[in-house]
Length: 390
Length: 128
Image (cartoon, rainbow over all chains, first blue to last red; front, side, top):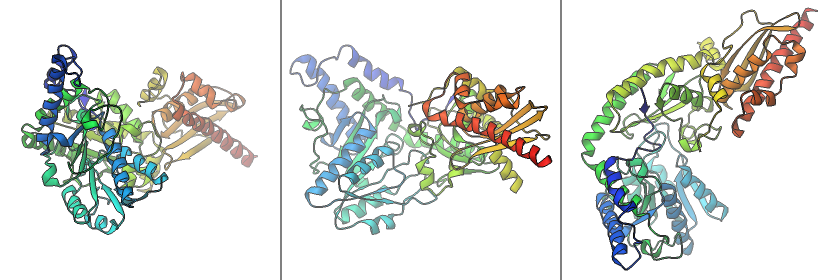
């Protein structure tokens, strides 16, 4: 049996999204900037998609800027907010210790350019505290950026409350909502965010396309110079097929969302109950306040990569922390931010499900995982000393 | 970027050779630490200067398991002198290569073998 349980890493393109893309590879081949009929047809696809995506998140079409994905959107939002702040002498930025590296590394770059960065701690439940954020805001704070749903532990941050505080204090607020869009109902007006990043491949859209929502009164600067695309802010001929696919995927994803989430939640809870029967295992992050499909475990005495490889041999695709860091030897910065000891953080496993997963698949994971953990523990000197201690 | 392991590495972590402990080991070496994410423990049973049996326990990634497994195969039945010549490079070559970030696992395998041989020597000296 093959089970794909790594939906937070990426998802399979839906057939509806593919159908929406196909004509843009063939008949609708024009350059959206061209004045002739072929160009107009392509432009129509781009603008219709922009409108669709905007309305699905409660925004206006002119507030949606297409990007190559979530990382680009994060980079753009943060760099520009810093620039806007610096113009007014504000050079302080606030974020959290468990953001995606697209945020953390952008902030590192700004630090090297004379900005001051405060990273809020994340508590053991995987949540930031609104009060700690409030206390961290200063006169010279230009931006607060806090992710909506954490990519590793799936915890849902109090974004609306954070936005409220930021507005009361006149600070811009950006949220990396890459793991939230398509999975949670989102209305940017109700949330009160100023900027929001999203990526299509997290909700069964194509890879290489995403968007940044920017509230219309924010004078965001250019990301790429050289053309009138994206209101002159991001030059380059639009990726028309990907844009069409993204709009269709988001529409499809949000249809019957509540019913889908209830189904995913039931699968997740069933699997969590089964997996937590394994001795010396733990679920990382709050069990309730997390994305419907996310599970993140630690198993003492074993190491995450070997666990993934054995799961892969059994046909199960999962991840250890974030797929982006699988080339590194350090344990997940997210789990360390939650206060999990280094040696335990090494033994982490992220299982991410969505509406395309089935009960059969979840039960297959529950059947295979305990034996694999046991096999690895049998060959682990760490487990040997743990069990000796009792 | 995903890391790709050679077929041999995949075979050695999927079916590790000589896993376990030796109750009658006369040379035991343990290297690495849990904070770094790798610990290898090597058990040797040496008779008349020859490694009659060898077993290992490893906490670590796929490469750590594979290098431990390969190292045990390479020293089993060999003399102490031959086993001392084992290098991490030879282990990597025998596995048809390792991704650059995983080469340190092979160093650990070499060190584990050497630590076990060292332990054997110490025990012999204490007996003498």
